[in-house]
Length: 451
Image 1 (cartoon, helix red, strand yellow):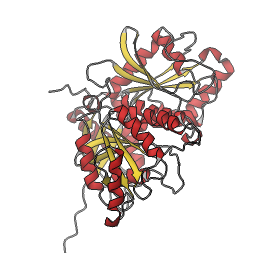
Image 2 (cartoon, rainbow, N blue to C red):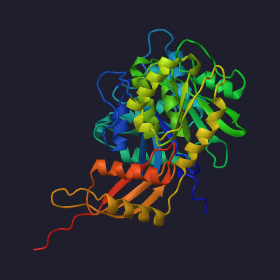
Image 3 (cartoon, helix red, strand yellow):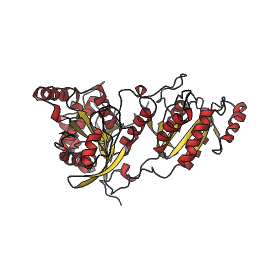
Image 4 (cartoon, rainbow, N blue to C red):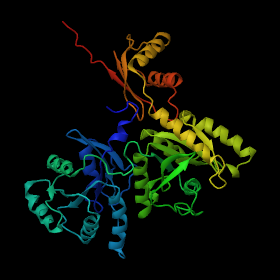
């Protein structure tokens, strides 16, 4: 039986499925169909780029990560090379690939170029002929056999026709778990270094590794691939993932930059702890806040590293203190370290911060401790009366760790403000340094009034 402190995410990595294809073949519509909700932005305009590209999906009890890679627009010159570069980066991160073609258009030169990439990748590929809205279009789908990728699954992403059979076929191609080589329990802890472009992520990795492993340049966005490096910080081995800078809006990035951002998202998914690097010499930006939110939403342990401390003076440090209080107060639970990747200042202190965050991330509270705590909190601060009724917490349990997630069984719906209050008190009681805390309220079903 596994230790209760080992996070489930470390035991089973969910397989990653990349959805690829040229613009306007219906990839985002298909993603929405698989998810059962409208998440990906859908427009008739080819090449619409989305801010969020990876989604949690489930079919027949199997969980996987679905990545909508967006369409690529090729110019008149170097079409095959451009497609190959972009598609290969997207396909590399996947355990399986859904290749979407438009049955109403037929096979194009761009489709043929992607097929060559897919064959070289040796990844399992599911060929999906989209826009087969009625049986009369089945012949168009059958013509896709010529691509040499096996049976084409005819679907209508818009109407849902054939999507069940397609998903059954996808599950048959998926490995039992994701293929990320660093995801084995007991190995070095996985730490992603993330941040907006040009904050010093690669310099930090090089300082930690003691050698020039990543390209360092004053030009923002130099790093385009996550680079894994086994390093020792304070005598403890970690697997560090240096990632391309996350841009303010993905649509500002084109070609390989767009797919580098996509792989950054995958690196965050793969990591256990994320070190968000913030440039201390500049005002905290909207990009910084967005990255911090992204790490929290992904449920990863968090450490904030204020880099370029050697470039700050007394006045800048006073302003930074105000900015942290005003803008970063919601992440006050995250350990922070003032560092200089250039000079090495305090870089060795990152190990202590990472360990503290991971310890908080894997903290488990026994059911007895939790309900004793909830009893004390509710007795001293009961939920406000709403509509003549006062919801009560009947029972609580910790569903899992990594991040700590709690289920509260209640007599009715609870105000979001009260749930946040419970979270604050949980942190005061049990610590949870450096980790998001998720609380799920499960209200008891209302009984129908008897006549």
